[in-house]
Image (cartoon, rainbow, N blue to C red; front, side):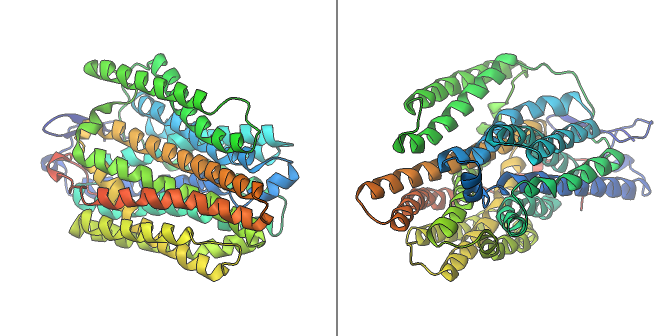
Length: 511
């Protein structure tokens, strides 16, 4: 039953597979219609949650395998980290195009496209004979993952009313935060028995199953319309995001003497391209033709939430890639031990997601964000004290604290950022949130590895033992994260509660 959700500022088209058409408002839905909408909404959202968990899991599943890959493929840490960085960078470049895709195509079509790309990329990685093909598979995987995240977020914001969004976003935060956090544990368990290729071989049937189930069960909940795609914006975004991330990654390679291009060159290209990209969007959005609508940043709640998200996502992904290197190369633990050490924190983050969602619905963002960011900062400062003699039990405690703090921040940030927007900006806001999330993750990964490499090289040049030098590099990376976390604590005090009066007035009942 196609439907139109009326709002004071705009209209959001919502459709399913039925053939009749009418305006959906609280006044004209019969009692028998509401359960049908609720059931359909739950099926669509739950299927997307499962698929999103699978695709995001692969974002960090390679982390624990990095030391093994460095040995098997004869590559350095700076090169190996591209298996994570290129994944996130590809997502950052592709995600802005999802706003175009979601407006031009039906929900089911976009879902099938995303899962098909992810499945093909997983197959390529599973049979990769070397680093180059493995990297190509990761890039194709990332293209599918990039489409799935904004699709999930936009669908939730369209279908779920404001009073229930905290609970639903709590479930999404489980996916967004726990999937990448549990990746190292899954990887460690696989590597304890199998070759690294089985990281992808074992995921492949799950991806195929999710694709088949989604193709059969996902309903169309948006009405396609013709919108233009600005090719120049796509090119500028690729140079902007690619230049910045490549430049940051090159800092570590330059310190090790392995860089081909001086880091300042791609960073400069990235900054210039980013400036041109922003100017291009400001011009295009005057006629509602922007590739990435920047009017979202006129909302204080959105802007502050995004700034806070950059710091926290960078810290999370930087920690996820650096801790396995520390545990295996400094403390000399096995991959399976590394995965199990990180498991309690991942489990805690998952358990807290729904709880934090309910707390958000009751208290709003600030009572959760302030203590959450303080705990995150304390955990990162504790990581700066890691040495070659630190007991692994202390790593578990510190990672548990980090996971707890992040659990109290992600749900409020995702809900507040999108809930602060007018409905016609939901798609643009979802794309922006997902783009920033991946850019922050890629930048955090690149920055942590670069500082780790620089610190290790500096310590090695002073003639210290290898494990001591590696521990020194870990200290340098976490020190930068700890300092940045202080900015997050300050920003948490300025996140406002979303104005629910801007939500669609006729939104179907959610969960």
